[in-house]
Image (cartoon, rainbow, N blue to C red):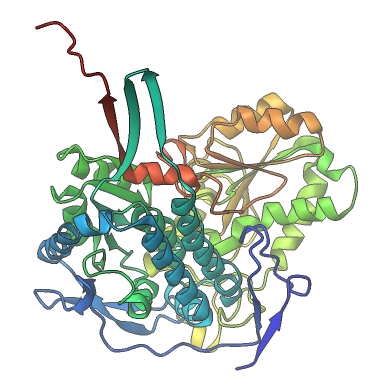
Length: 528
């Protein structure tokens, strides 16, 4: 294994926008191999690793080659209850812990992840299937940044007080909710954990988190590394399947809030489970994001045009397994042919080989189920009359990767009423269509039940502002895409969810406000 370290100016993979300009050491690796795992892992409850109460485990395999990684707990309601009891027992003491101490512990977690960045990246690649260059240069560094960001936020925060009159003072106090149930997806395992845990812990809550059953490894590795950082019961990890572990977590009366990231249909179920206890929920759900290219992008054949072409091809980033994947490409008709010729050529040049190799740009889909789902949508697209511009099928690799779950980066040409334009595929598949003018671009862009992300590419100063304002989406990238800085709020409109992730405002999603109305007047009101 050869490892080379590159600075920001030397790295071929630019992560400045992804990592919010954080000065992380960049890794450039020639080749890795599958990491070593134990045979069996356990839940982390009340400060220690414990086996599932009924002794059930499930086998977790790597999508890279479909080989066994390890066995993880197939937890049931009783395991969830054990974790919730531990969290409830710890919540008062943790909620009363000073913000200084909480901040210091979050920073300690960040330091530990950063010190073991290479190990986390390799485990994440093995578990999820994404290329090693992404986990090393994007996923794990950004996870570190989120821990540090919320560690800083809680230290900088101040309360509010108002003098209502000469004898009356109003004070607003932020208090933790108590115990938070969190459920995260499989597409960015450690990063989604790092979106959820830091703001909840920083604000004084205890947490029971269920990782996706497809990708349990990096959460387990994290708990091995930070097992002694937090007091017992503050942070608990319970593995398992949605109906068996996720449902009892979301529906428990021992939970004070539920935070969920995943597909829209599952989010609807989670809301139903939480509603019987009147618990607040945060939902970050699916998307079908438009990526709009106006004719001005081709006014010059320059660096900006090159950037715009990459912006279109970013549908293949993370194998398209991104809730904001720019899966609908909208191109103004007078540049359509020339622009798409460049986009197709760039897509054909994507390297999809060994995910452990630094040169690989697109890896394996996260699971066999997802692999089959994407292929079914490719067939649906053809049956609907979509034209395959590039890709269109599974990609059979050779040798040890022959049994892995690889899909060719694919572009389908059609119209916005097709199912492949309307339904979330969650794979390296983009659907492209033309538009005449701004009005039609907006009509197509907003013609979806989703509203999570969108992209706008233009050299026109008016369009830079007016078009994003008219798009019904929670995050609109303008002349960029796939940047996720910790200090920018992220969340959806319509059926893409509600509530926000990241940014200072996120802390209020994990707290409630107490108003103290204090009178200094010795005299009674006089009513009685």
